[in-house]
Amino acid sequence: MDLRPELLPPVAPERLTELASEIERITALLTRAEPAEIVRRIQAADPETDYYSRVVDASVSDPDWAALVFHTPALDDPDQIAGEILTHRPIAL
Image (cartoon, rainbow, N blue to C red):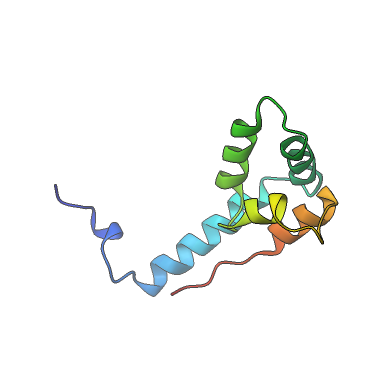
């Protein structure tokens, strides 16, 4: 199977800029309060935790957001955790 050209390396700088702006647009779809509420529900082991995890995956650029939710004792406040997740910015490699 042949891959579409946009999936093949090297990625053009214009495409990286386009992808970064799309990530920012998706991130902007969530209000500041919504990620905090989603983190609260995930931490409370809500029956829909898998769903909420997918929402976060699709909405933020931080690939390691779950570590902040589950493995960072210094961050136990959902508002703080959501703030850290939302401040992550991807870097072009």
